[in-house]
Length: 178
Image 1 (cartoon, rainbow, N blue to C red):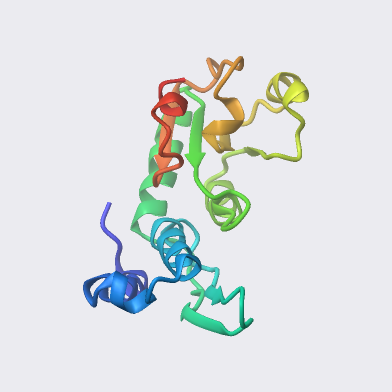
Image 2 (image 1 turned 90 degrees about the horizontal axis):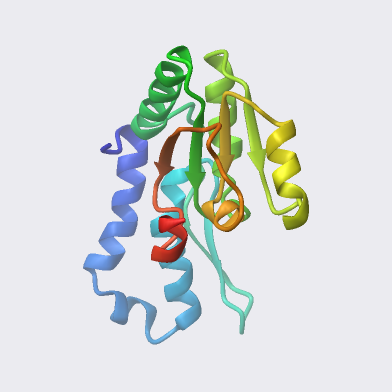
C-alpha cells in the first residue's frame, strides 16, 4: 500500500538522505546510520512519533522527522478494512508489528480498529513467556496485535486464522516460518 499525503512527503525526506549518499551523510557514524535505518523501517508504522538522533558522544540531537497528527494513512486504512471484513466473516485477525517498544504501532492501530467496533488485545513483552499461552487463551479479542517474536515458538494462533503483516516485523526467516 502506497503512502499518501503528508506521510509520503515526510518519508521522502528520509529517502533524500539515502539518495544524497548514506556513507557521506553519516561520515562513518554507526550510531547515526542505525538511527536512520530504524527510522526508515519503522516510522511509517507509527508516524505520530518524532525521529530524533541523539549522538552518544556529544549528546547533540538531530530531528529528522516530526511526528504527525494523523488519524490513519493508506496502509492503516487498508488494515482496518481487512480486519473488519474478516471479523464480519467470523475470522479473528492477528496483526504482526515490528518495533513494538520503540514506535508502538499498536497504540496507533488500536483506536482505529476499535472505532470500527473491533475488540483489540495487544501481547507485549510485559507478559512473561511462560504466561503467554494462558494470556492468549484469556484474551480472545477480534484482533490480536503482537510482534511475531513473542509467539514464534510453542504458541499456536489457531484462533487467529488471518495474519496481517504491518510492515516488516522481523528479518528472521526462522521467525516468519514459525
